[in-house]
Image (cartoon, rainbow, N blue to C red; front, side, top):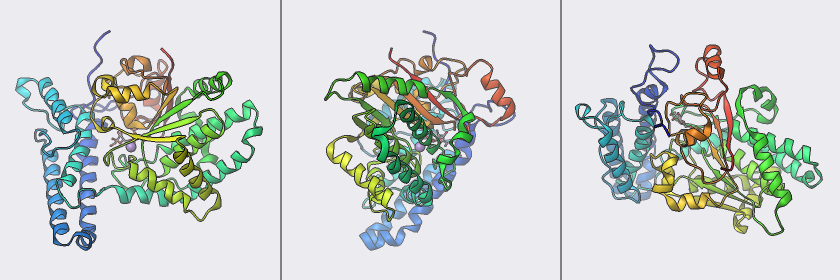
Length: 448
Ligand SMILES: O=P(O)(O)OC[C@H]1O[C@](O)(CO)[C@@H](O)[C@@H]1O
Ligand SMILES: [Mn+2]
């Protein structure tokens, strides 16, 4: 097979306007420094809390973390070489090996890997890993999540929509046993679309500023339909409904969800996961989250548990019923949470079978894997400059643990599997279609 194309990078010019910097460039130049500044500010604001908890040591730790983050911001803004990680952690060696690999790709005259010249996926992941390094180097505040507040705020600000979703689910569950095939399929499609548009609410695109869901999303689904550029929902239905019909008693149907953002998006994923069990389209759902705070709003085990607790203690009866059910699913092992350091490494997913064979083997147990969000799409496709019409399977570059589907709103200058001319038409009618989160895809890759 021909070599895959080059990686997106901060040195690229815009895909649609050659005089402009690419989205990758603008992210490194503007968005990432803003996220760092916000993280510094958050540490500042928690100063007295650190003091109350840890006394003088807490104050010193806050100063240390802030100085490490300021140094990081300076390295980035002056395009300094990317330096190895120093603090020993579970993934430090793999990171440093990856860095050496990047170094080997840089030609002699260019010197070392640098922020604006190396692959965007690598430097952006590296930035979040360095934020984590700054925090773990600063005990006793080494378990502080600088993004926790924003994630919680997103949840609280989306309350009305969350209540609407909880109510919708509970009403649906009352009659779910009596629904005919067609109605069940319609409901499945609705909840898939809710989970898709839930992905608009990430906090990395908005530089850590609030990005919540204020309106009832269920009423907007028809209006959003034209913005689904690749719609493979039928494939998901066929796969799961055929399996439901043909599987024997006591046989498992397992759907794995590689999670993205906490807050509103996570609620939409839970609603979908609940429906999968209640409709018997699946018998188990496995979730994958991040081991460290990541791309501002990504879900950690703490966020996962926190959100279920919040929902359970809601004053709204339908919502609290959701929380009780979700906790029970976990207790019964029908919902299973996994984490793995691979998800917070910079590698594209086609490297998973080599870098994390245990994770690859785990995913192979699924009958369907749903990959939520934009960053997962970038890693599925290697964050490379593919032509818009290249088949999704080709861009996956051999990654195929099980049938899979990307559920993603577009927030990076990469999209594959379009019809001839579709990308060009979009560029003409809506030049920023690739990066605003207004468009979405359900992109499926079936059995080999
Ligand atoms: O939460 P998501 O959907 O993965 O989106 C995170 C996105 O943030 C950005 O990095 C912008 O910083 C996107 O390009 C990126 O993929
Ligand atoms: Mn995210």
